Length: 180
Image 1 (cartoon, rainbow, N blue to C red):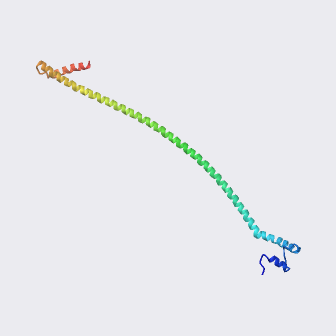
Image 2: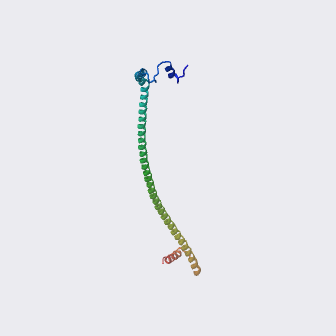
């Protein structure tokens, strides 16, 4: 039995066909003829499907590249849009913050004005209350002075000066003294 590696030599030794032997032109002719006849079948069965698969693979790769470029452009567009919206949001935030500060300043001025008005009102009320208390105290002191004057006059005169006319007279004298 012969191995596959030694088969062409064994066939040549037995006088058979050896396609690698350059002395036999007929064998080479048959080899070329068989190869030429089998090429269309090889192309249809083996090479055609491989070529179609390679073309399809190239088409898929081209489509994937085009889709990736389109996605990249869309991502760039979306990034630019997000940056624009972010800028608008920052501008809006700054505007809202400015408006809030302005409203706070206006409200602060209003509160200060209101506090000044209330303080002024409280001060005026306190002054009025002080004047009323002063007037009340002066009236009490005058009544006491009238009473003391009548008592002193009755002791000096050694009689009771308690008539209403005497009190009015002394009140009038004290009132004139207080005015001058």
